[in-house]
Length: 158
Image (tube, rainbow, N blue to C red):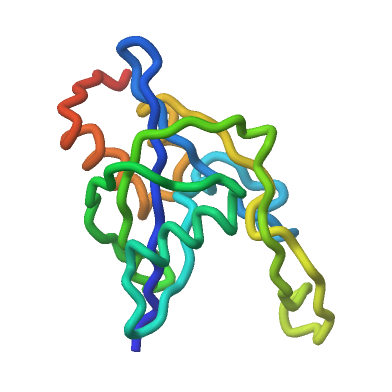
């Protein structure tokens, strides 16, 4: 069975601009990667678990912020790993400096047998829609585009 994740894309309005909140994964693999490595806070869910409920749980675990309000379905994408990711958007605000992530244990370096504890997310930031398209994982770019369409935001990217 393919792995499935669910996530939330928080957005806010700054005048006529729309901004989205993205997170950067923690750990040594991602430490020196920036452009194209940011993502929607997300996590796996199991059979019988409602994807939106899992997305809300994962958002809070990875950021420390509560997700509430109206949720806009952004659909699903398949990542390069084959994982299917479903996402929703909601309007909110937060201070990225106050982000608090949970930790997980990974084997590092790979196949070394050495286990280390890392934060799932090492930082978060607000991005304009055009900047988000460059910052986010390529497979998750459709979430930004669907949000813009659903909110009828038209921006010319130069």
